[in-house]
Image (cartoon, rainbow, N blue to C red; front, side, top):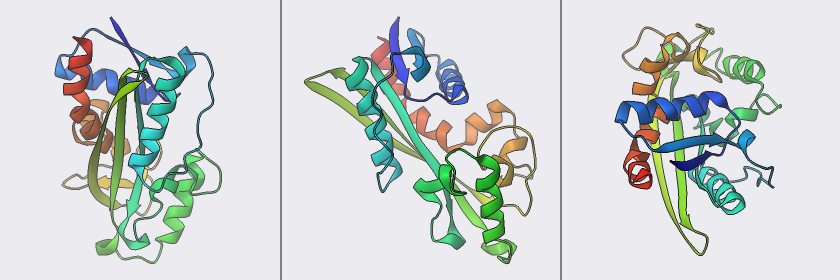
Length: 204
């Protein structure tokens, strides 16, 4: 078995990669999270793009542990807000990871925006860093999931902005989808699927 470190403490992200690998029939990998390794200095997310942040997190994890590392940075880009909150999605409401505050602020900002202008996209950049310390290999991919912002939260699944994100061609928000349905369509699912060939090679 080959260890792969998912550079996150979010167990839902770990489970998501597990499901993507299972669906693709990839075995031989043991997924770990940051909770499973000794603490190390994690660089702040100061990149201007999702790709920069994902790659920085994966590089930090690989350098600190020597284990192949996967990291993602994702967020919501709202058309009427010129692509914001973007890389600031997790701390839009002022406190990092406060989903309720982030969602409440977003809905308040869009209160007067008509339905036809509430378009948005979830974006995920995923980075994989592996190989040797002196010559690491890096793979960076991007997944995009288009939709629109609802006027009120719906559904108890998912996390983040899922309850207010209505995917294209769907009458259910991301928080109303099953995990399997979300994996098949979501930004992170799409990005992780692009990493499968590299992860399959890593598994040997």
